[in-house]
Structure formats: C-alpha cells, structure tokens
Amino acid sequence: MDHKIADKTLVKEGQLHIEWAESRMPVLMALRKKGEKDKPLKGMRIAGCLHVTKETAVLIRTLTAAGAEVSWSGCNPLSTNDSVAAALAQDNISIFAWHGLSTEDFYWCIDRTLDFKPTLTLDDGADLIFTVHNRYEQLAKEIIGGTEETTTGVHRLRSMADQGKLKYPVYAVNDSETKWDFDNVYGTGQSSLDGILRATNVLLAGKTMVVGGYGHCGRGVAMRARGLGANVVVTEIRPTIALKALLDGFQVLPMDKAALLGDIFITTTGMKDILVDRHFETMKDGAIVCNTGHYDCEINIDALESMAVSKREMRANNEEYTMKDGRRIYLLAQGRLINLSSAEGHPAEVMDMSFANQYQALCQLAHHGKTLENKVYQLPPELDQEIAQIKLATMGCEIDHLTQEQIDYHSDYSAGT
Image 1 (cartoon, rainbow, N blue to C red):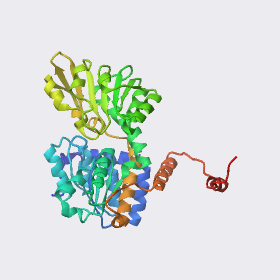
Image 2: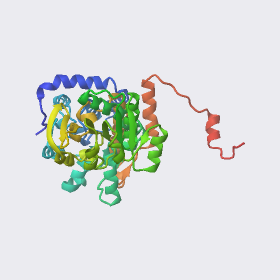
Image 3: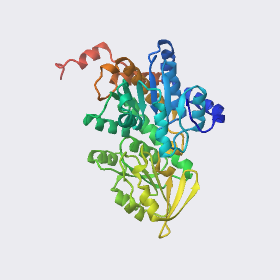
Image 4: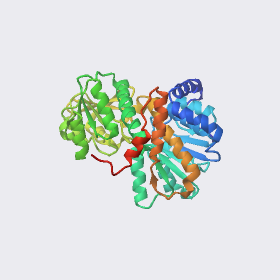
C-alpha cells in the first residue's frame, strides 16, 4: 500500500492550498531551489509524522526535490487537511493520514510509514521515534538520525537520552531560535485565537481569558488575546516565568482562583491535568475550554464527561457539557490542538523558518549523522542567523553590520574606560 487518505477528489483544492503556502515560504523555496541542484538528501528515506497541512506539504516537496524518498503520517488525529493529503498522494508521496483518526488508526498510519525502512525520521511529538524504539528495534539500528519539531517531543526525547534509551541521534529543531521564538510565540498566538473564533465566533474584547502556562506558546496566546481586548490571567508553576508574566502586565493567579473568573480557558503547558474536576465545579456558566498543547491530556476530559448530565454538539469543534446545577461548559476540538483541529495551524510565513530548520537538520544528519552519539542535539546557532537573514531579505528589511574596528573592540578584553 502506497497511501491511504480520505478523499482523492480533493486534489485540486489541496494543490491550490499548497501553492498558496509556497508563495508565502520564501526561505524554504530558496532551499528547495538549491537542493534541486545539489541533491543533499539523495539516497535518504525519510519517515515523517507531522501535521498534514499545506505548509508541511511544502516541506515534503522540498525534501523530495533534494533527492529523498518520503513516507508520511499525521501526528494528531484532528489536524490533517484531507485536501492536502489528496494532493500529496497525487504527487506519489506515500501518505497515510486523514482527519478524524482513531487511536488505532493513528498508530497504524505510523506503522505504514516504517514499511520502507527509513534512514531518517522527522517527528512532531516523538510518537514516531517512540514507536520505532518500542516495536521496531531492528529498524533503529539502520536509522542514521531524526529530528523533532515541538517542545513536548523534545522533553520526551531528552528523558530517553538521559536514561540511555535513545538509539540514534536527534536534532531538537524546536530549540532553534528561529523556531521557538517565532513559531511558538507568533504562530501559536495567532492560530490558537483563530481556532477559538472559528469554533465559537465569540467577542474576545471584554472577556477574561485564562492562559495556562507562560512559556513561549502561552506568551504568544496572551499577547494576541490582549491585542483583541481580552483581560488576560496567566497561571504558572515557575516563579521566574510567573514574574515575567506579571511584569509583562498580566494578572497571575493559581488555576483554582482563575477558574472562578475565566470566560475562556486555554492550556499551553505540555503537562497533564491543568484543568480538572475541581476547576469545572467552579467555572462560570458558559465557560469555554480549549487546549493548544500537543496532547489532549492537559484538560481532564474524563472528569468533565463524568460530571456532565448531558452533552451535545453546538457547532463544529464545539461541544456543550451541562452540569448538574445547569451550568454549561463548552469544550472545543475535543481538547486537541485548537489551532490545528479548528483552524489551519500556524501561518505559512512563520512555518517557513521552522521547516527551513527541519530541512537543514535532515541534511546535517544525512552527511554527518553517523559520526554523532545517541543524544539530543541543537542545530548550530549560526544557522539561525542565516535563516533569519534570508527571511529579513524577503521582507525587504536591511540591518546594520559591525565594522572591523567594532569587531576588534568586541574581542579586546583590555578595552575599558
């Protein structure tokens, strides 16, 4: 089997989506143009497990243009764009993904991407790598290396490496500055609010939005919510990060207190049980609950289900849970990633840099992976500057450069008053 998708008739729609994304991703397109000539990935077989969006399709096309064979699955049951999947299948990509996967289907799709014995892996959440390590140990011996896109996956992989369980080297693409400080902040901030609005069409101005966590993703959401007129409350467990949120002008409270105030709740932490039964017990009638962390465990949906006396779907990606006392709580996108389940994910302009890092990481592994230890690595910081410089140029922005005298001064430890 070379692919399994939902609807082959969506090819033309998917092709238009991809072409639109290509027009907004100049860095990756520049890398593709060079890769078509140099073929840095020739002979590589890449298994990918990452959201099947129009931006991901641009990355996949770039990998194949650089000489790689590619097999792909989606990394979230609700994030696949079926028209994009159809277009990729038309491109002869071995893709196994459709919107609304069951858990069983999800892992079946991952299994199929491993049928062609990959030499490199690309992950968003580490489910592919974890599957290789748990069920395909023989394959792990042949894999040169892998890459990881998101914070949650990097945490999992670092835990594996710390325990000596990681069987091949992995680049933490998430930890590149041109990824986490742009994709995580500006991408998550805009796309998460986009998802909330598509699922609810509520007015954010004047609402109290509770943001669970003030990491890069939480900061992005809080910034954008404030920009639309919401009163933002942040919850945190780390004193230094809570202090940053406070000095950035946000109210900081424990979730137990924030639960009494919030009109909209969004979790952004990567940790389980951010919203649990005691919070649902005190929320206002009409409270809206959603998640933009990688897994749906941030909201304890089992608790919400057990507390509700009735449940109904109000509109796409919006379910109403009625409590015993008549209060209604609205859960969006089944607690899955709101920005990808209810909207289209991050804008192409920001994914341009993230996927440029993915491409460069895979090229690094193809040429140097066999010399690396089984650890989690960061990409060279010079690569961030190179990607940012290309991005600035495509945006028509010029910056200053140090003179030789300034360079000499910078390294002259004797210079003082």
